[in-house]
Length: 428
Image 1 (cartoon, rainbow, N blue to C red):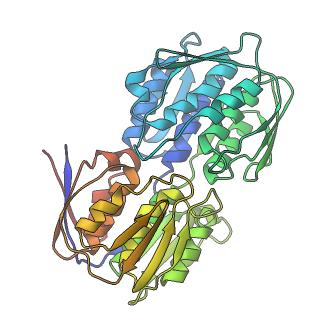
Image 2: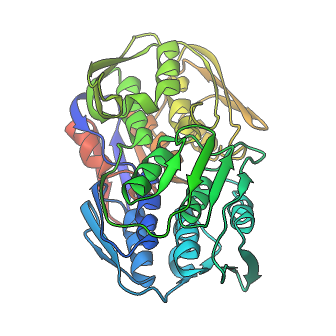
Image 3: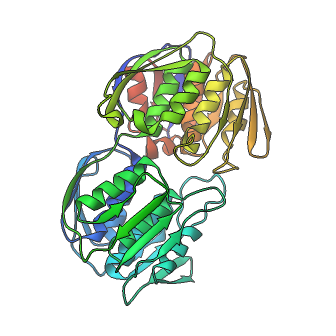
């Protein structure tokens, strides 16, 4: 497995562009199953998760041309309904094919999904939504079998769970409901920008979805969907990661295609800490802005609680933990989405971080310098957190198991080098 070797202590400076959103692209790709027309996606990032989703769609009878930049998809075979374990185990987002398959082909056989290992992430809300639309759900040999031989019917569905709304569950139910008979109401729908992006694509295909971006979606079913050409939104988690990279190195970095309007909670915490996100352009189109990120010499502690959007995103919790290790004073991070998502704490401690965990809350005693050390990544965002720590640390850091990063960051080592970081990929 490849690893990163990082020499810390270099101030980052320069300009890079944020790639398209992974978490938006995967459900957008699955939506191609809802139509016989051609779906064109632009600004698709070059990631292993995208390649795996393309492979899955091909197994489900979709012709997929291109796996980054511009991607064109068209259904060629409507008879394939089985998403096999060998692909599904590689990423949790493969569950996104459930709703489209059920709506269009009235049957879906999906292996239980995989992805990053940081606690239980059940799909019961997905299945509850399908049942509310009239589907039958069975489990057989590790496969979920969902059928609706008479088609789906609109319903009122509550999608709230113990940790808030479900993004992929909302995407699945929305894709199923657009082809159901009648009117569907999704209450406690996810409000994330990625859900809005999917609704925009589906509406461009001929769907009738109202309320995207709010907690209540109203969907009027249609007979069929057609072709569409769609530009994927920039990745707000990648944008936040590079902004933290600028902050932990006391850098001066300009980020283009910065989804400012989708990151207001993040920008608020940056301001509290002493990191400045200056809007240079894009006030008229704030999901495609250009910003300059700088930081004060003395960073301040803060409190962070992860929440569903528009709250602070769980996918930036680990990166901000690295940042708060450098703040002078005690900070508190509470994880409300995935309470077990603290596998990076032990590795940061190896680098000299002073972090004390009690259940879903960590106290970060900041101010002490970080020191380079061999560390091992456990999941996608934890990997990013350790790379950021390596950039800020004194000496050399080796981050192993970086295949996680290739799932969610497009050529992160090359972009950090472009900004002046000393990072190299070691092939083992």
